Image 1 (cartoon, helix red, strand yellow):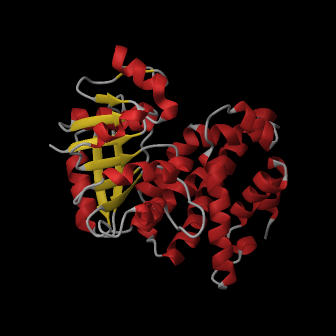
Image 2: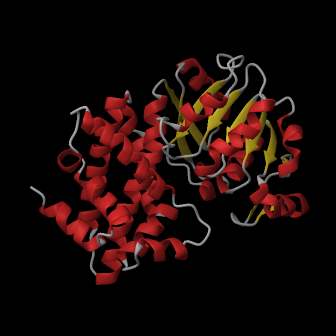
Length: 344
């Protein structure tokens, strides 16, 4: 049994808390300033207002001003806040870290320069006195919160520089409904987690266009998925990631489930139906479209590889090139899909 604190009371944070309490761990769930209403309802009725499900008993809930209490004697910290807030929230968590703590990151985005992954960003905030005594682990794979919280069979992979650390996280979180594995390829796990959100937008655009035109485009979507995986490998491998990671749960698995639904696919669908980026963002209201942010981060990584003559964005990443043109240069999804398939 481990003493765990989950940082962030959104859907994934609450789903992770529910899974871990069922697995026999002691779990504190801390909500950010934006989670106040969620924590109140969980305390009063044990129901998460977005997941629309009762959480299992035993989880202790903490408001934003109770972080010190939530962190008390915790051995594992799970970072489950929205990706753009990881740096801000990690700075609040760091003062309460102790020697031997494991930090598991489940957020998915490419952080700003000079960081390659969110693990790198989190590690940069840990004091030098603890830098070799606090381990940061990435988690990837197809784990939709709405299914995880309802005990639908799920599989994830943990990545850490020291594979023994990843295996430890794999072992203590495993259950009959939650299959786990481990790898030392933490870079591959974290980059896959971010990049699949970007490609899910493009495939979502294809889905929206097919509905608009009232025609089936399954051949098209399948082709785009295959190309997305190929392009992910062309970026990830030069940065030290492994092909087997891209081809496994962190890459193919996570991309597939993200295409099936969620914010990124929904955002792409709106674009495919005819909305421009601003209109689609407004339609998504307060939801963070992580693939939009990830596309900008991917562009930075791809440009760095291009400058080193490792890849050509137009020739080696044609699907990504079209995605970037839609999201940041105003190109229409229909034209982007047409141009991708017309490229020799």
